[in-house]
Length: 292
Length: 287
Image (spheres, chains in turn blue, yellow):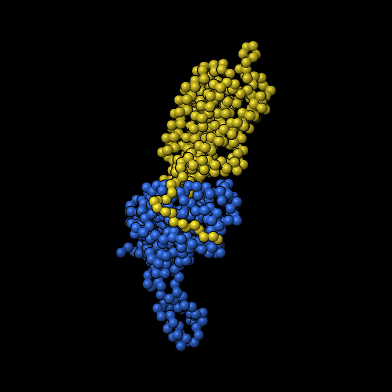
């Protein structure tokens, strides 16, 4: 049964808390993912991203809060619910001696309405490696097979945990193409990543988690403080390198030229998502250190 | 690249998930193919009982017969004497040892976590293990019996009744082995330690249960200890099938005691099943 169109989000997380002993791994996190939306979860190692996602996938139990994934509490998610989600885990070690196509066809057999095995192999660019044993595949090929295994069941919602770690730039761009296609075809995607370019390229919204807290959530080009997005003008003169933040970089550059001629090493930098993100983490840390 | 098929699935609801039987067969097929592609597993686990049998049979081929009467007749050859013990131990190796190590490895390399993210029911996964063990145990048995009979002239049971007795002991032992194998798979803390944890247990049991040593020659207290565990009873049951009836007198009670064997096997099956059903998880519990 699809709850698409009923107005309820694909993923709803309200005041989620998870503790490991004394340590709070996820601390009062709230966010939603709409049907068809791609949301990137960003954050440093140990921030609570994976714990959050593993709770949504049904692998871990929460200590407090409400979680709904496709309208179901993942803690009690049955097999019919699992048939509607796709999970691409972070680490994969299971290789066995199965060939790529065999493993994919085997997983297809678990689902009520799987995608066509050869179409999926082709879509992830593994058609030519179909008869290779999984353990003989390169790291990038394995990762693409992981994704193929995650989408073979035609999931409405796909969890992708660090999907392109270890990819070369070309493989990464091909992979992004595949994810965009899934998105066009209506798949809801929750993506965990370290890679801010990836978040900016793929996601409709990004959520930043640090120290178990949700620091900010919004479209990738709008998260962070207003100050963090002010362009930076950098130039060099006889006294050294200068940096100045200004909302009017053109006027500053014009005045520099008017007073001192052509400045050396002139740059006007619009803060990338990466800088905004680092700024968010810095301000989160300083808040943690000086509680109000 | 072709477009992915995105045909919407029409109401009411999605097609049904595949049946347990279909999934169990699919798992069995997939696991068997992987099993026979791993040469180390085939050599050490699958051929092990036959190899040991050949070594024992060849080493003692010059010895006389065992259990001959005062007139020097009615004994059996060494190979014939060792066969039932190795049949019994083959079943436990296929089931308990292979499964416990295999599942512990699948838990630590992420296979189980990955399967846990799919709609594959745990029962279908376990049915796949049962199917794999049944097929490998039967194939292993056929090979062992063929080598014993054709190369070493060991007589096989001659009556339907004995084959019937063989069938129930074999079937019950296989089921018990699967239950114990799944039950024990949670014991090793990692896939790497699985072999070190599981193999010695089975090895000790083989030594005290009359697989390598003649059971009747073990001290009484050791026979009693061995009697707590199932391998002794499976081996005794197999002796009742493959050895002449009068060999029963050297057993602990002077009879084959198949009733007790059935009870002990049933008890261990239930214990294994209970542990398997209460402890088996796709992923370890939260730390």
